[in-house]
Length: 258
View (spheres, one colour):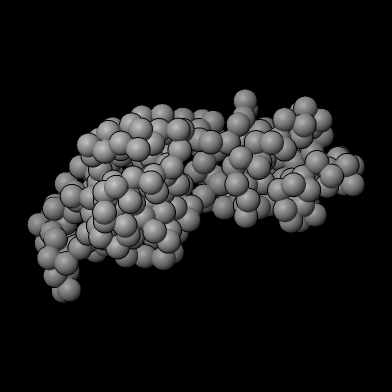
């Protein structure tokens, strides 16, 4: 497909109706620049000091919040400092540490199995390649890309719930499949920006573009968003929906304040 071609439905794959492939790329990159301006402090919100800590924290983040994981991991990381320690952990002790994260028995199994696999396959070290990471128990592409992007500096797109929801709202993708979303979005944004793109989209999903009621009237991306208007459009009411410590900055970008 050439840069100006459209699909039979009138738009490039993942695009809004009538939008060419070139138009989609240009719009996606404008929106990414707006995200960079909006979320200047975007980062991985899991606390870690090593690839192993990030890998474990990411596995634990399933079906709970990063805030909860960050409350639990200081004690966990102090008690288990390498893969062998996780593999040989006392199950009851680890379960008590992980209990606040929910599904703590299953997560204990995952972390202990993860430690054992690292020892057996990789000499106790976290590998720095996607194809190796996804062979580990409990590690899919999402977790692997978090680790690669934030612990190894290898660009990766993290398709979590926020990322999938927002990129579909923005018509960057038309897929519900995380691997396909990663592929389609990765074709729009330069590879060097993939990791930061992931952080910025996730920040935007948590602070502005909420699942049930997005703050459309207070969003600096609205002019390029084909879904603008599905949420709260009144600027004053929308301003009250913007969350996080960066709320004043986000509102100032659209000429609003609390």
